[in-house]
Image (cartoon, rainbow, N blue to C red):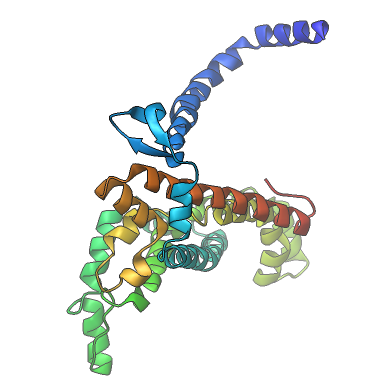
Length: 304
């Protein structure tokens, strides 16, 4: 035991520069990621800012029971899952298809121009995206103007609950498709040209090259991306949903994140909102571990 400690000390002493290099990242992670976990205690207390976290009354699982037994629970959970699951299923494959398309473009200039155009929406603020949606899909907006000229009627895109999810999901796909394809594009760039040349010599067409060369190269990246995306199903942000909310589409647009924002910041019920957020995080963790285990079994033990 003593010899092992001496060996470890010598190893650390010999590679101290590496530890100094990693130290800032570790310290910042501890300060900003782990220390704030202390605040989760208020989820189990009747938090009063005057008494502080430790001085507030302990109530146990009262806030969790209050949330689960509330009439809004199933609606909030259903809306959150629908937005996330539909977004995952519809938004997972477009970046892969885009990366495969980029890989087939021979002209580097054309490829770079298209990448620039498709990457740009990712850097647009969520507020601006929401404003664009309200502008284009308003009752007198250009989309309804075109639709009215074709059918003679308009559609209530921004006021109907049935149109909220399609607008939210497809605008998200449009905004993130280019940026999400970067990882796949970089992976395809590292595919051995010799494999492609051998496939061409053997007479393989484009679809055969994609199926037998490109997709196997993308498989590990696709696996990790899917696990991370599936594990974050419940971690959908409140910003876009809140900005697109109207009194008419509230039955579809009210999700757990917007509910936490309204209860916590607007109503000042910090303990209850923290309990709801903690419930959300625990579900996320369970989903991440479960999906990882399922993917490992289906993918010959490869996962996170």
